[in-house]
Image (cartoon, rainbow over all chains, first blue to last red; front, side):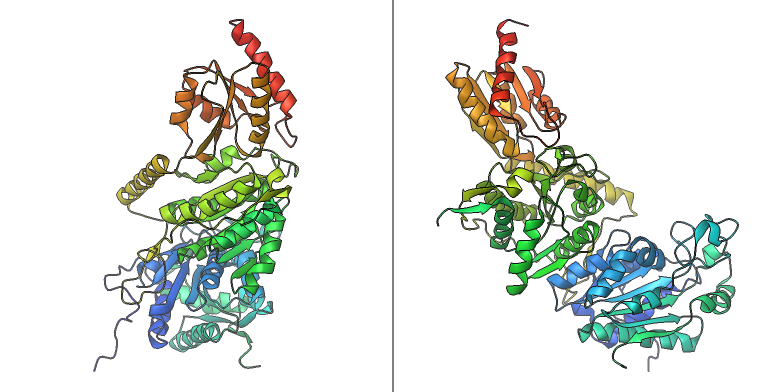
Length: 247
Length: 356
């Protein structure tokens, strides 16, 4: 019996392009498994956005449109309003979703669009080489906060899952991590819920994934997951922040 | 069909519906707000998508998303807010998506004023976004053309998979005029070979502008310009008025050309052989015909409500064949009268006849 196989949602000839130890690979794998399990491949239109997350379209054998930086939730709104029978989700980084695209992200949530969104939070701009972003932790050294993030110069990081949960049109909002097997399982369950609320037409389903960026954090993959546990989870607690199916 | 008295903005809105517009995304700005108001009443009732976007940036990106599925989608806006859309128009050109944008011009730069002006010629015709791309631009001169060119805007956008602008101004948007809703005259366009619909029985499709392979990217930009060349050969539109024996040619676009025609008549009554040439497509610019006409004219005078933007294209088209001048006494937000245009031509002709 085959116990481990590549999800059918993956392209047959995909080339792994992320850095070693990056959590993008695990996140995309979970999404691909769910697309298989929920039988969504034939009706999915994926919206990627700018940053490392954009390369998702090189992995998955899905119909896909690339949004300009930050505009994924607006582009996805257009797709869904034009074709309400399709399954539409976005895959974005924290800079994309919660800095340049914060207005689009929150307003899509306020409108209660039937959309799902997965946001990778790695506390930095990965593709451009590790600059300060909206989720960079206090004290964190980046290439544009060389002495660490402080209040005087940079202000505070944003808690994305909580902000999305505050929007009345949000059906589900959760924060998960990929540092341990149990957490990976919880992450998959959360993404599944975020997909299902769209299928039921309940509103926005959102999952923020605390993720590693070993290259720009200058850490081994193992140390990077320790940082997720020891530093990120203190500021960004894991959990379900809104679930209207439980209320 | 009978003519009815209708405001330009409402004419554009109803024409979009007649053209099969399925989705509208917009944000209010004077002097085009009535388009969104009208559609907010009509579209939900007809089961069509109407979204009050949180910004013009969001609106144009919603159009991008809707167009990626092959849907007929539109946004409308004005000048400074159209500036906000430029990044996505560049994406739409590269993605080859049939984005429809109506710009009812204000007077710029900046917030400017809401009065009629033509300061967005460069932004529309040469593009305000990054990289090498062009957009087809239609410039109506009356409410009837607002209807007919809205039809054409949808058709050309979908036929060539390229963003198209309908460039009106505050006068056209706000004025009422008798017009007739003719039937949408164009055939449906098959988008089944490229539109996103889910990877059902085929490989997934990717619509993107991003390409790390530089050779493919170079070819992509060249292919875009092959398409623009084809559009230039097939879709150029212009109007001529009393040009057969014209020695003095007035050139203008949009609503202002109504007064150019009146000036031509007035000049003819005074014995001056004047004519008018009006590009209806600002891109593709009708350069061949203008070059031909320049050969028979002592002077070509461009009349614009800006600092001389189409003047650039007129000079390029005339290419030194005859004298080209510019009459633009008030570049931002005030109408030019028939009398002052006529006087400007007479003054210029005195110099021409005096050999100056």
